[in-house]
Image 1 (cartoon, helix red, strand yellow):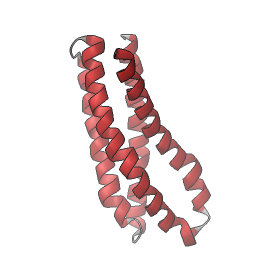
Image 2 (image 1 turned 45 degrees about the horizontal axis):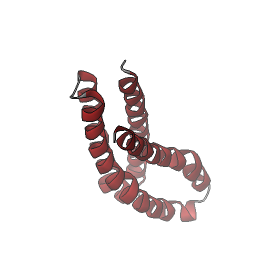
Image 3 (image 1 turned 60 degrees about the horizontal axis):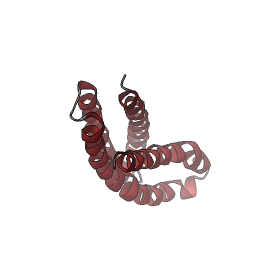
Image 4 (image 1 turned 180 degrees about the vertical axis):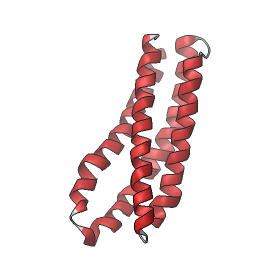
Length: 140
């Protein structure tokens, strides 16, 4: 049972972080020189990734993370609380990015820049979450 929840948690984290890396390293550079389709493409890709990447995967990451914390450690340690706190910051930044800045980015250069920086911040925080998860799993 432990392996299944840990496996699901790793797959979900891979989907979440991998999706953000794909968007920033592949999709964004491709669309940079295509202003005629850039905004509409980002809106469409953003909507699709937001549904699976943000809402579904983050919800399941929370559930599998809590189950893993209980199964693997028999309770909660300080490092798990710190990771959970950072996770909620990522959720807030994600919601702010997806539901506010991302929607307005189609019509405003200011919001496009805000959405870009929220995405970068979210990616960095998410990579930090992965690092924290590795440290917790290794007992560090």
